[in-house]
Image 1 (cartoon, rainbow, N blue to C red):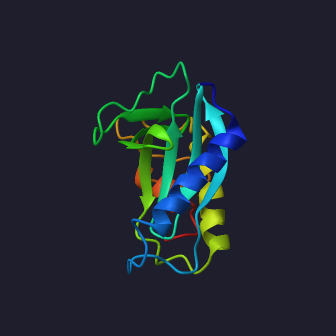
Image 2: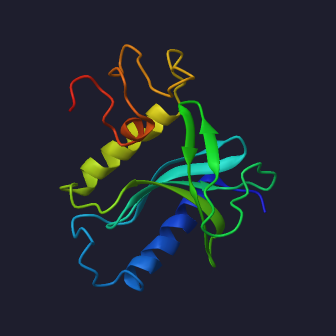
Image 3: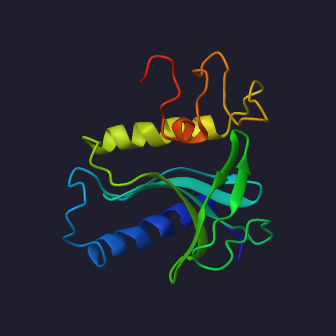
Length: 168
């Protein structure tokens, strides 16, 4: 079945709202200031990619398209998926209403986010950064050193938003 950008984002939101109401209901790790939201869903190499914000985690999610080269594989496997900013490790997962997908954990738990707006702003920054190739990236170390990026930054720091010179 071909992917539709908006329908895929809505289906992902619906599945994780249900998870929040069932499996996650009442758990103390939930941030009461946050709700399930998909940010900046788009297509990349025939797959749908976006950031899923929940009260318990923020994940970069890849849902494979019909001709995807990124089939998640068995549950729990850790495929490496390439983006313009570099390769990132995902975790293969599956939900009955969603099918197979891959998730790359960005934040968990979500207690450091004071509100939904700050979580969304972080997700938007991560998505912008993910799709920008860094010409100064060292292939030997995988670290970035471009003008906007602080020297010696790791990919985890890049995705978690700790990449600007004015941030610790």
